[in-house]
Image 1 (cartoon, rainbow, N blue to C red):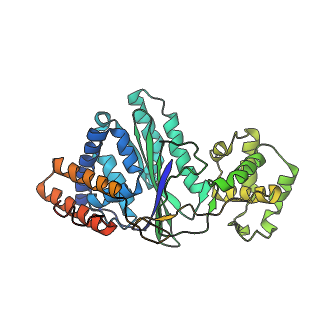
Image 2 (cartoon, rainbow, N blue to C red; image 1 turned 180 degrees about the vertical axis):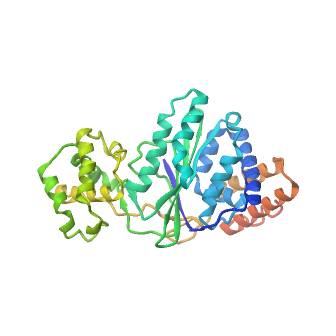
Length: 369
């Protein structure tokens, strides 16, 4: 289940070494507390909650309004639990940029020590990235992918994309619990500050489009070939996000040669086809619409403004139980952690500032933290 999306301003810097080392200690303390109290599976659920994750980044000490909170918090947690993975039953792979491409190898390495088959986890990592980069085309290119998992096969993904045109980043949260399909509305709650024109092939309204696209890729068809050849000169439907300049029939033909040789069972299988990128999938979506009359949805699934918890820019009070549980978790972890008193007090102060910014149901409850 994809559990949320958050929009944040892009931030090009990174945390100073002294700050990152302090963040690593705090991340370790919080992770150890959550695992000790609730088990490693609960840590995955917390990471998949955008509300909790943003509080986590704030407590660690990074600018929680910037995109750097995602990459830095994930990096601090991964480094913080290094050497404790087997004791905690919690493992981390991936990261920002080049580190994200090491995710499969790091999953395999961890699974070898556990004696487990890594393939289901590797596939989950690859599919979650492919869905957010290709099946959901919202203008954000992934550059960060962190994959967390437990020894019993549960997993959580925190990944982030950037949009250079609007200067924003978008964060995607996934969790394996209750996941029925990677390609049919895998999210439970989505949070952001901006919405945009989107090719949304994971929307339920795209069921017909997914079926038509998959049918096109299963076997050669004269009408399909004719339509593909004509794409660069066609007048596009007004709602379609494909520019004629983007269309390369030769590239699309290469993809189809592969799929015709090994027909995909379904749309999820099709996504794993080598060379099937965003442009090729947009072109296939257009062909499916022209031939079968099955348009893809264009609804941006990001519906909730993260910073204040409101929908479509309208604030509403944070649920008391959720708010208090988040605050209490961090307060307890910080009080129990083996930290210097200054680090502890500064972290508690940041937690109090975050609580005030979000909007406590009872603004005086946590003043003495």
